[in-house]
Length: 362
Length: 225
Image 1 (cartoon, rainbow over the protein chains, first blue to last red):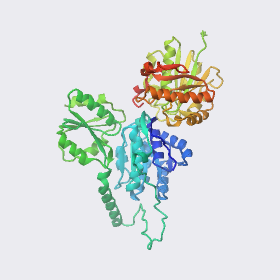
Image 2 (cartoon, rainbow over the protein chains, first blue to last red; image 1 turned 45 degrees about the vertical axis):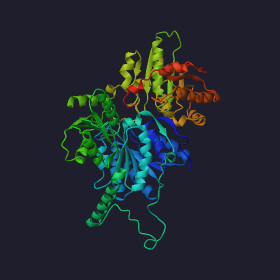
Image 3 (cartoon, rainbow over the protein chains, first blue to last red; image 1 turned 180 degrees about the vertical axis):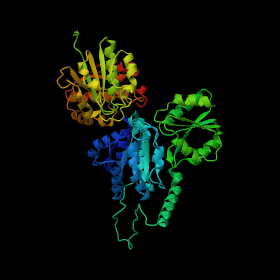
Image 4 (spheres, chains in turn orange, purple; image 1 turned 180 degrees about the horizontal axis):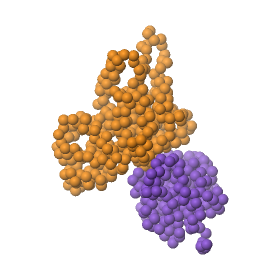
């Protein structure tokens, strides 16, 4: 295997490039894609890098096709992936649903842009509901929401492994700002960090005679009878719940003795942590809680933080009109502390915005 | 007709994402403006027209630069029009005085120069390639060579090695040395090397074979940059 990164060193990159390099480091074989801002440079860079490392790329006629070609390639044992945004994410929900139904190790990068419809090309956190709970229902997914370029690289590598290990479609949820920002990060060979890259394996056309040598592979996205589907959905749910805790990730910052806890995700959590530093310096006891996996959501971890902090208020802030808020409210059902919100749909949130909001609510 | 007492400068800055094209172009425009020259700064990024100099337009105008660039107001209502050429940018070379062009990234970005009337015929136009050694595609001599050779035309190199907020004098010096070595090998002139003004004291202790320009960073003010 040709080393793609070589010696670990710091590099100055846009987020989309960090992802393309992450895909190479994760030993991905092939990207299928259709252009859409703000994920385009993932494709651009992959197509620049691909010929040098013996990788493949196919631009399909649309996002529906890009998603289904990934589904097909994966079944033949190719580590395939795609990347999209906004209206492309909407179109890909049909193949994503197939990946849920057939338990395909599908890895996709979503760079959120404004909505509804084509919205803006620029930035938002408005694809949370769609990315976490899209498809036609009852599917199980894993969604990592990143905040830094280092995480874009790290979670691209991790995302492929998660998909191929657990066989649930896995998403890296970024946004247009993360896509275009320039920031230093450390690129490394996964083996140097003790990360074993899971090799792809074919799901179809396996060795041996069915019935004597092995069980048949039932990769199905349609069932004749409701009882059949019922069993499959319950089994998938049980599988998901059995690994939920080991997949769940979160981070907390200064939550000890915090009287107000800011809940945010992705790039906005950087502003939240900056706000906490300023507020603490001014004697205001603020803390920050950030789900890294939006699905599965770190429910028990958030409840534990609320318990130990003695928080009197929550502030949920996001560049959307309450998509994270709906998840949080559902997950902590039964808690009675007041929840305040700072929603700036499709617009960046900086520490100043959060500081002003906190001061107005305490 | 106004007479130009000295020949005007027409410089087009090309390079990778995050090479520092826009920052170098802004600083060059400001440098010339401070010398009392009439300067037009043209945002010719047709690849991603909404992520470029837009948020800095008013500020740069207040410094006396004539900006050809979409403002938030100009872009309002356009939606996602893909590759879009600001009509004013097409005729940029007809403006009097110095012209600094900030070009979209990469080889295809450089080809958008074809869209500027008179660019191909101009003997004033110089194509300046900005190289940052901290970029993976230009982080070895072989890769820099391969990268330079992918362009149709380069007149000068600008060595601009940096690592954003994590830049050190060592990173600047070591990276730029490599860039200078390749330029020398390819017989390409290096116009200058650029470095964040915060490193002026440290870098002035060293001797360099090319002029050093110290720059202020404006791009971090754009929220997404």
